[in-house]
Image 1 (cartoon, rainbow, N blue to C red):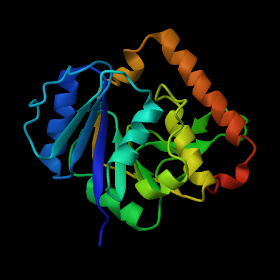
Image 2: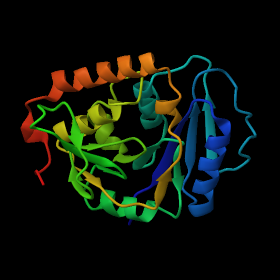
Image 3: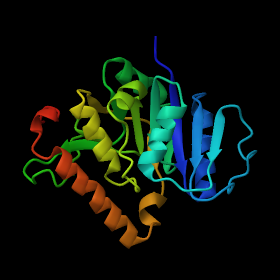
Image 4: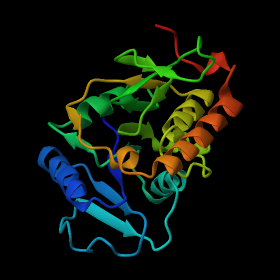
Length: 228
């Protein structure tokens, strides 16, 4: 029997794109959706979605990416959670294939990912296509909620998403979990979290996140998936 699953979205403005994302999810699946509206109090109308499928949390004080992921982990009870960016659009239902991978013994499954580049001394990753991977990206990143909770969750120091999803991936692998990249019926629109973020802020926090990865994991090749 397949485990239960929930889609978790972090909203930070760009309401039209959020509505498009949610509408595509609802068109293709009955999977419950949790939205964390970050940044300012009540910028989304409480009745915006008018659906039992969608729950909305709005907090006045903004949280960083790691703390929002941990909020989802702590405040939901499903077996699996999907951390998904609102720029990702369902073209069909990706849930059955995602559940198949997770129920088969992987602790994380996602749409895009890769292997740590050992020749580059862990400074980059390589997309090797579908198969077991070292890291998954948060465009669509499903994981075993209880497993990642026991592994310590996301790093609260991760204010910005970029590279924080890699750190979360490697934490799962360091705890003995396995990750798999799979083909899914998804497409990506404009990723506002990258393209519409102040470049100095983006680069500063991306670098901070990756520096933590190097300090925590570089050289621990035993936690990595088989090379391919």
